[in-house]
Length: 205
Length: 205
DNA sequence: TATTTTTCATAACGATCGTTCCGAATATCT
DNA sequence: AGATATTCGGAACGATCGTTATGAAAAATA
Image (tube, rainbow over all chains, first blue to last red; front, side):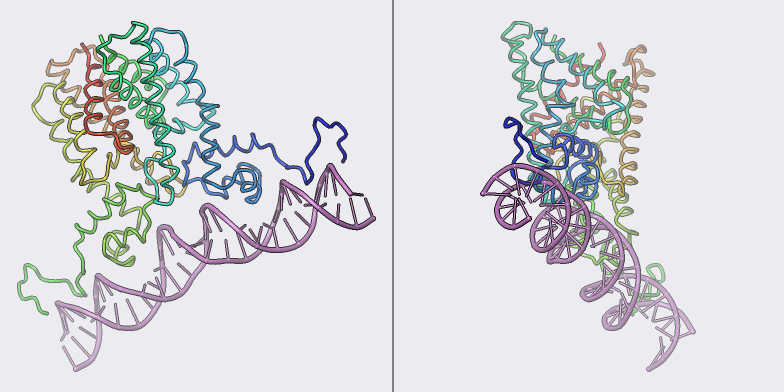
């Protein structure tokens, strides 16, 4: 088949036989549910509907695929976080909404339970140390994002200047990570919401 | 060699060539650090100083060894919990001490970081579903233990009757699970202590 | 139509997984 | 001493791991 339109001109060789974004989405779901090591190449290729050679050609390998799946998770199912932090809300309200949203998102019936980042890859074999460190780094950055939001609250005057924003940020992230474990263990949405409400009682004065 | 004393009479065959408790201890350490699946039989037998056939003879297999390692963890490194819950303390003080003790224990230099139970085996391959369920069940029982302690507080009158003990217990366990993730990510003892202090601010009135 | 380029499916690779088998070693019992 | 019982080290098992090699398939280009 020939393509005349120069704006959609096909490259030289055989065209890819699958949708890259769709395949990445399937991989993300499996990694999300299983973690990195427990998701085998056989399962990945089956879920993505492609062959190992296509996977290597398009994504570079299992570890690289996992990192791209992480990116896709943050930009997709995990995208609910950023707008809440960025919204023009009182600081306390923002984190209350964040915990409510987490309770909702971590227990959706149409998704794997828990967060793909929050409590994943805490244990692994030495050969997976690289990906473990990558996930841990994302968790650290998430705490930083909380800190930044809290500092914005201090600057805006709706959070007392004496508050230890580092400790508060880490506490809030600790709760999120615990919520992810709870969700994976089968806790209900209402139970997670109750945990979130309890956690908010720790909000300074 | 012959053994005369009938109270320490040896059984018929060749005597075991290793200390069962010591070997189990080594296995526990490795499982604690790596989790179930990422700890290979090669590493286990090397750490325990025994052969695969001895491991099977003495423990039954990898999965059974893991369960026994869990028991040993609870009775050993994790034994600090029970006396704090059982102590004759005001309820609030008990959980404050528990969080302080956790911050200390989860960051010991002579042990793997984090708790062997709290945030482990949240993701695994289908073949390890059995052990995952077993660990999850222990986490559920831990929440129950917290609930029982809180109810004791209500009965003793140092916790208001209107308090939702289920939610409070789950919140406290959620924090513990999050602390375990934090510890594995390298958070310092002081940081965990600060998280614990923040969490205690959620204590009812 | 022939050539070139890229992707694809399949099979095969070496490594490692948990497990089992086997013969030697080491003890007690007859 | 010989028979019996139990444990040992080590090899071997089939299965599965992630990865790579091979050649056919499918497109544009010459």
